[in-house]
Length: 87
Image (cartoon, rainbow, N blue to C red; front, side, top):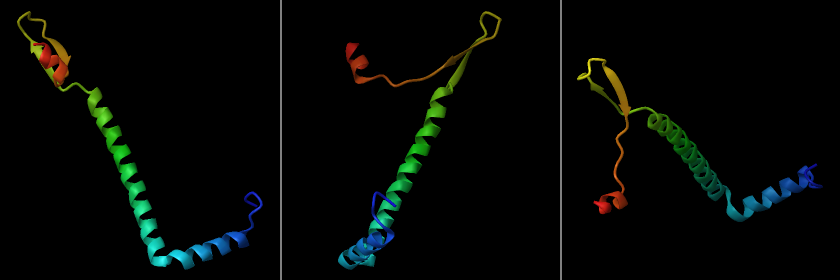
């Protein structure tokens, strides 16, 4: 089966683990592991949503002085400390 390990050997190892740690501690470990995976998936999903928002322009500026009504898409960004120190 799995590299020469039979199902009976796996059941014996599982029984020994349950005897050593107990079912309550194993249940807590399983719950913690499940919560960590759930949090990771949620964080990955939030990053995807933020990535879509970053691609969209934040504002549109119109210059009607020329009469043509051109529209410019702009994105506001924070200045880094290095850029502020240059001034």
